[in-house]
Length: 136
Image (cartoon, rainbow, N blue to C red):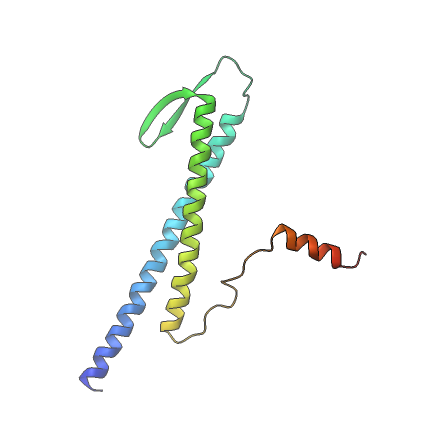
């Protein structure tokens, strides 16, 4: 094998490994975000419990590393906004993950996964299908 071929092989292996590392880092970040999303969902559910309780108009909430006492409605709004932001970050990472996996497979000369670009049907499309399917 010539020096040029060795260099080319090393470049291919290096780029493949870099993309594989990015895929693994994204996976770990997705796991951490999902854990945070579940904890946030639990917090929203706990804050929504017994809203008619007049004794607790203010509740304790953790924001970052601070513990704050704030009105229930303001805390609920803060938690819901945080939940939306977490879900957006998860969606971005998942779409990046699909691109990285296909890029990795391309470098290894495999065909891309066929099911990675599937999108769910919209409500209108589902209704059109239901209208055209025979009733049982």
